[in-house]
Length: 184
Image (cartoon, rainbow, N blue to C red; front, side, top):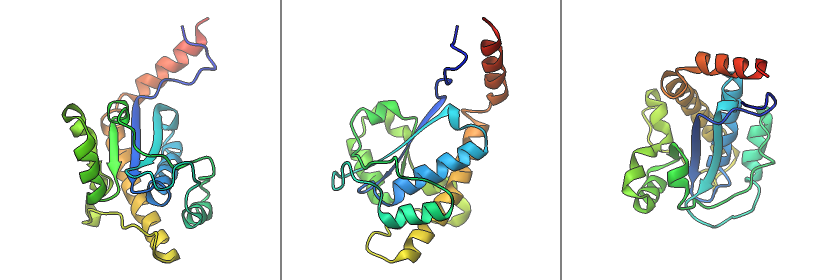
C-alpha cells in the first residue's frame, strides 16, 4: 500500500541534452516542466537536462536563459549543469538532443539497445520544419527568445505525444492513485 502523501512513481523519464547544459537544455527542461504542470501530468514525469560536454559542470544556467525563463514565469535557479552519464541511456525513456551534432555525440556513446530512446527535440514540432534548436550562447538576447519559442512548440508536441502514448491511461492512473490514497 502506498503512503497517501507519497508522490506516484514517474511513468516516463525525459532528458533534454545540449552541448554544455547551460542554455538550451535547461530552458527546455523548465518550459517542459511548466507545460507538464499545466497539463496536470508533472508528477508522472521525471525531467532532467544534461550536456554532451563537461564545460560547465555545477554551474547555473546562462543568465540569458534564466532571464527569458523568468519573463515567462519559469524558475531555472534549482538547475545545475551536468554531463550526460552512461547510466542516463538506461534511465531515461526519451533523450532529446537540441541539435544534430549533440544527437550524433549521444548516438556514438549510447549502447545499441537504447538508441531508440534518442530523438531530436524538434521532431516533436514537425510543423516548424527545423531539425536544430540553434545554440544562442554567442549571440544576443534575440537568440534566447528564439530558443524559448522553439522549445515551447516542441514541448507542446511532446506533451501531446506522451498523452497519446505513455500517459494514455492517465485517467486510470489517477483513479488508482485516488483509490490507493483512500484505502487504509
